[in-house]
Image (cartoon, rainbow, N blue to C red; front, top):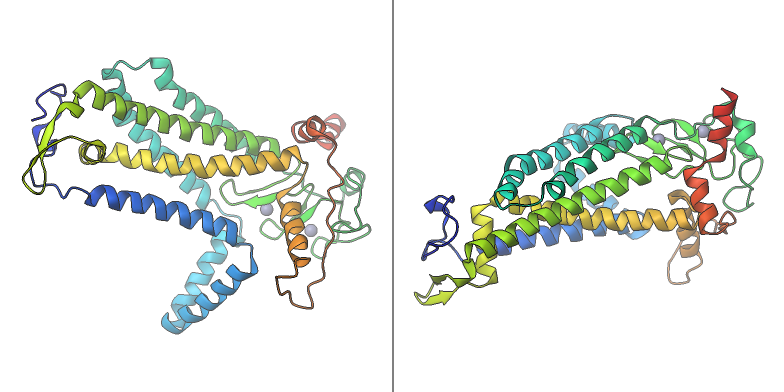
Length: 365
Ligand SMILES: [Zn+2]
Ligand SMILES: [Zn+2]
């Protein structure tokens, strides 16, 4: 069996007779993907809700009975270091993961695709996206997001109107003691107030604000595109391989000793056993494309409606506080949020890609 079109594959790679548990690998792999996807999505959606915070608190209480005090302190210190101080851990992790994916692509997929006579332009596209992505990654990491200082405080105060709800006039930051311009926020990780604060991103180890949100959007766009391109190349390669090898015309002996025609499940399992790294990479980039694509859509929605993540989150909270089905502590004061900054799609996008104060600052220098 399998005598047809793939002479370069070693014979021990071929699935043979009864020695392969038919569904095990595939089922486990699909479970792994589904769990990873559901877990990440659940954490993303629920991390900001009270219900989830209560669960985490209860979980932490239970853990505190099991884990000794010194270990718990060390864990808390580590979590504090990772998420509440500026550090390069996630930047390095990001580069390592990207490096691993591209090494696998170069080492295995690129050569095999060339053997199958894929167009070179098509194969070089992920590298082009990588270069553009790293460029915007560096810009997102290094650009000043719009730090408010004594010198530029007055200038920032004039940029946005105060809405007397979320951003009232004449409020000072309790840490920097600077007057708070509308739409700004103090970042506790970087210990500074940032103009048009969006969020603090651990992956770029920087705040995302008025002056680097455009780089961040391009970074996200190119990262999603490179993951999606790699997913497409790997899929096309595996499909092409099955077509070239005429795998569908083969037969095999199943667990019950019957001769059976090769079906899709068998082909997927065969590919998983023959090219485990490629199939694993495919699973990873598919999940990544899905997650990054969803997040990119959310960021584009915020950009198009002229909202920051900070405002969206606080707006959603304010909306929840008016909901009669949710019990809120009596101390929580309902905040009113009206989006008074949206001026139509093109003006909103122009504001992000050509921030007014950045130009003014440049001219001053
Ligand atoms: Zn501050
Ligand atoms: Zn920050």
